[in-house]
Image (cartoon, rainbow, N blue to C red):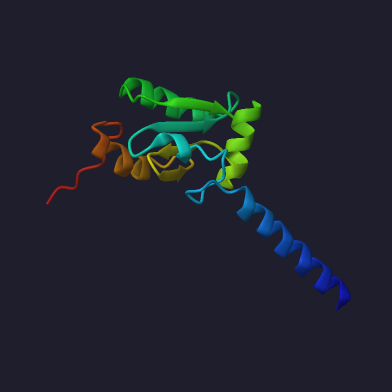
Length: 125
């Protein structure tokens, strides 16, 4: 029982430290959403990731204006931690986070910004 109490205190202290580190808007200072406003795009990626390469190709073909953060750099690693992400790609569109190569979710966020990235299947009536 004593071990549980120690673990509980450690967990509460860690949560308190995260709150203190948070930016005034409630985001961690390294969170890319601090710089994206409502319409900028940031891709957190890795050079060795196949889905990241595919997403970059898709964005380039659709002329999406975006910034890349490689997780193998200090800035990219901090962004990953701040987003609580465990895999790449992670795309920040404005204040929204899309995890993985999720074409439907990416379209939902990019179409309002004027980008046509993924053609959705049409259903015959």
